[in-house]
Length: 95
Picture 1 (cartoon, one colour):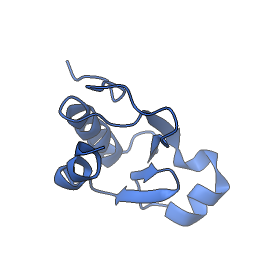
Picture 2 (cartoon, one colour):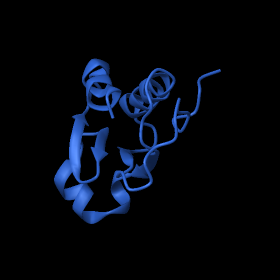
Picture 3 (cartoon, one colour):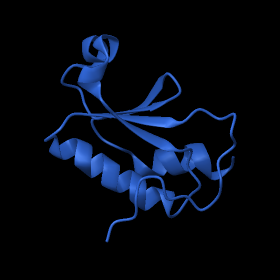
């Protein structure tokens, strides 16, 4: 069984922005990124991950369109279409 995306080794800082995974139903790449995030959350404390449909917000739809999945940290895109696990570990390992 794949751990949930919200599984973390430690509690996040309440003032820290969440990660937001912009997805679309039926998107295989989106599901792959979601699974990768769940695996990484077991290795490194990550902020909470919020799953959002890119089509729910017109600004997301204009900005990212078909370039999904997108992983946002606050308002910054830290992964677009593919997740670089080592980069995510680097970003969050020493928080």
